[in-house]
Image 1 (cartoon, rainbow, N blue to C red):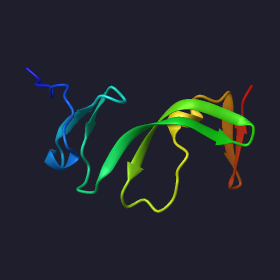
Image 2 (cartoon, one colour):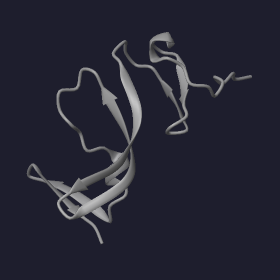
Image 3 (cartoon, helix red, strand yellow):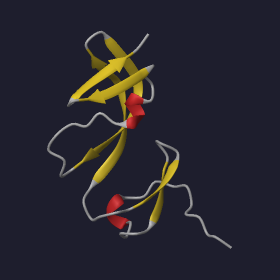
Image 4 (cartoon, helix red, strand yellow):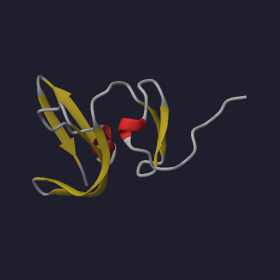
Length: 92
């Protein structure tokens, strides 16, 4: 029988590498992959030009020196395409 972690908030520092943990913000289970610190957050809104998308799940990572546009944002568009190093976002 498989044992699942309980659904309570834990401090990331208390989770061992390789251990499963539950994140109540995304309502998903994850496995800690490294000892670096990261936090799940929900962005009130993300704006790019005329496009505004509300309540976007995101991750703040201590060793990431740039911003990434992730699937939690991209999947809410009508479509998107990456070609020759240019990302085209299609919406409405």
